[in-house]
Length: 58
Image (cartoon, rainbow, N blue to C red; front, side):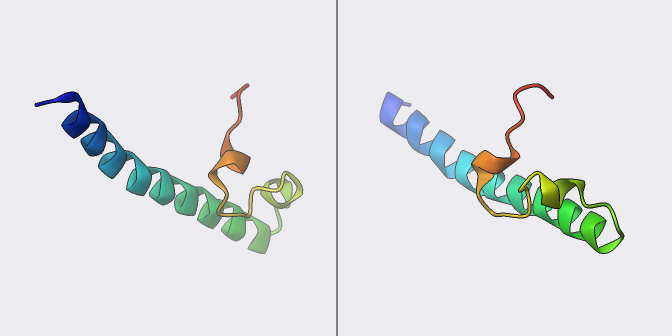
């Protein structure tokens, strides 16, 4: 397999996985907010922007 095929496979795999993880984390934050825990809302994580969900510290 050539390098273009490998890069294409990585992109085809990465984009849906990144979207799924983002939707999953937004759902966690939304449910937590509905149950009274405002942390995700206060941190601005109730968005589909995947960059907002990156936490370099942990």
